[in-house]
Image (tube, rainbow, N blue to C red; front, side, top):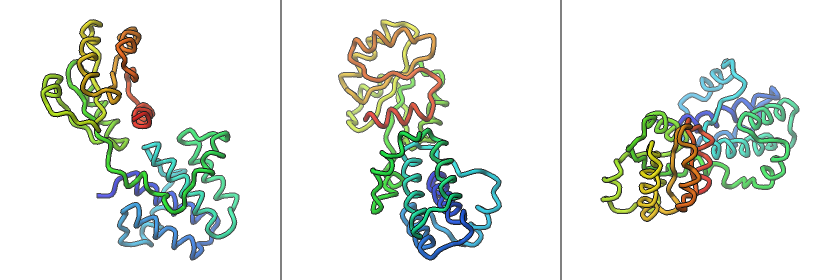
Length: 239
């Protein structure tokens, strides 16, 4: 099954290819390469093209920020394959960039970080592993959904089961604060000994005052609910 982000990246490239009304051989070759590297199997290119042309949306969203940035870089490379960038192509690329927070000040960094030989690496990475500890995690389902939608493979355990299990040094461990500050702090101290810097605490807005005490125990990362896609991206960037 094709991941939605991978398919949407390919569809954005196809829409970009159509912006100037002329499909060049270089663009078709780039699109074919993209499909291969994105692991998107296209049985009927003409049918996909008709779908992209008929869809009444500005662009196809790429939910994971790292993948969105990779898609943006691929779009820049594709726009230049025929030797000139049409104004409509430029506006399409800029519109996509703005959709996930790339500002004008970010463009120099984006352009300087393009590696044409490795454009689709972020789409090919294995999913980051999360362990969500269920104790006091009332909004667990919402957390699981946003984590999985943003490229994380999540397993759940209760605190005791996690502490008994062999350590997984690669997994990011997310635990929820308790209504009792003392219990949250003691839980954090136990978990830091096993998870170290890969430990994250999730708190509801009424528990925000506990962040100070968690930082004093040595915890680096806290997230206040609701957890958004940008929070997951921020956690992944820091590990």
